[in-house]
Image (spheres, rainbow, N blue to C red):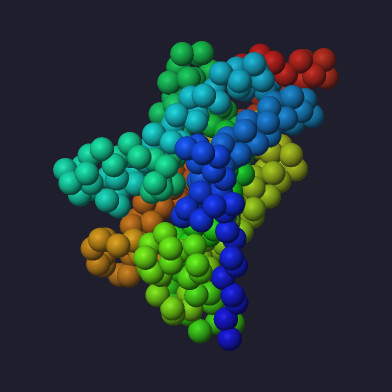
Length: 302
């Protein structure tokens, strides 16, 4: 028994295209990235404007500064994600198909590369605006799972990044008319596989968002420098390493020792960094509680 892979068909049958009007094609990837960036931007702004969250330190930066930062973040996500995919998973593209590196619309993005790209963007933005980097990161990571959820759903719709073979009742055969027409067949074959894209959407997207929502709004850990970022790194690393056990390794990857995959290897530094940031932030003394009027202002960088 298996679950049927849904026939989520675009308006026209052109691979991962969601909508086409003449020569203009809007792809599922594009919708996921644009939607994730816009929703994340709005969510981050809501955190900055919520004065009840900033009880010991003012909000790390202003909503107006967030409007500027979102462009930096978008460039970091797309540029870092694409370069990370090339360097970590398809390095042969550098000399075999260098033009293909810039064809982002064809798919192929690395989460870990995106993290590096966004980190560089935040470093530059914080330095230029004289902001506390760790506190800037605490706001951005709280919004990041929104885009990650949408991206994994897009992976599922595209019939890519499938899981390993399984005989569990929710295994799926990643094949339908659209996939057959796009690829000239079914790359995943007709073997039931784990819908690992949905696992990642559920855990690395939805569950991670709820954990960070508790950290920012429940425990108000945004007042402790770097703790929310540490929780993000630790939780994502644990989720990713766990799901890698049922996700099909990327083609062309060598056989790493101990059953490791590239995703696991890249997530291990996240675990270490996350534990360190949580430990550091919880040890650092909190400043005195802000007066109510100062807390309501919440617009001066700490």
